[in-house]
Length: 488
Image (tube, rainbow, N blue to C red; front, top):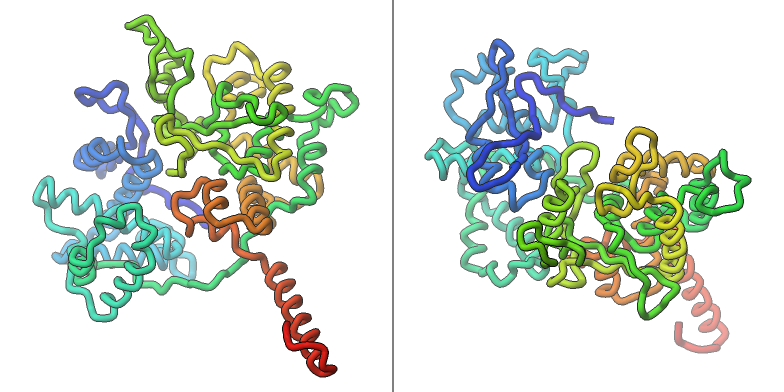
């Protein structure tokens, strides 16, 4: 397992920044250490994050600050060797090479004392791209010298660009802006520095799915409370909360982090099926707030988004913006209702909606405290933090223990991590031969290509299909030999 790089000459801190017009603005700030070890904020990067960070995720802020910090470490570690280098692209190219190859020699030493392990192509490219875009902003804002300027693309690079253009243009949300004239201009230029490694296109390992024949074992035995096995009540015998989150992923196709954005009010009885739960997953910032929100100034009920609701009523921030243990990621998923900003959970098979409603009623009436100081559905029950919003890390640990409890190994390669449930959901939709657009909507993907990893046939399915095809050919050969027909 690759470790994270140890920061030698910098540190990244999520902290409040005093900015006119913004209340309690918290961002990631890069502090550079001087020779005496005294930290100083890199102010141009602070300006850059303040300007763009509100429209971007917390992960984006962290990525650009860490990428810049790594580059500063590289410059400081090789200051003597790079002092005479006047061409910035060559310096950046050396940095890109160090990302891919690492800085540790075959004997385990490292003269730079960075001790970077090699990165894969995607990670190195992401770091280089973050740094390049920030450097471009410096050119525009402060007329700085370009770190990674454009150059004329070679014929081969232009051909590769046009292949990518034709592949992705039909699925681009901004397709109407991608005119041939603009594309021609883009095709004729390339960045001076890129990650010079050939990507591997072959599948190194098939996607793994949680074994669907073990899901009931996981819910009933894996999440069982050992000390309470003899008790008559279901809510005492099993961990209802973790079972509910698992059902949302396995039967509703949610990502691991998405259930942690749900409020208590986001679950209702389906008016078309009173035995089934209706679950709406709202955008954590822009989603419409619950109807009980009272404006403290106007003293009346108002329509507000969830960011305002959390800040004013609960003195909290959306979990996708919260750093630390309460953070829960959020992807830009396709919303069912663009006005109210929510995505509907689609149960498949439909009985999972009935299972979830039974668990929800028990959880609300018997488990979750009515006195929690927040609106989130899932709460911690651990001593010392009881009543706090439940964390993704805590669920991940609980899920791993439940998997081990029923005799399965834990790991992505076995399909037994939480995300394996979403893969099972997508694969089951595919096996049911549903229309690809229906599958896309169930998985809340904006682009159809995003669902390919969830719907690709497994090696076992491919082998079965080949065997069936071979049998059909053999049957046809036998029938033809004895004059029994010509169709396959």
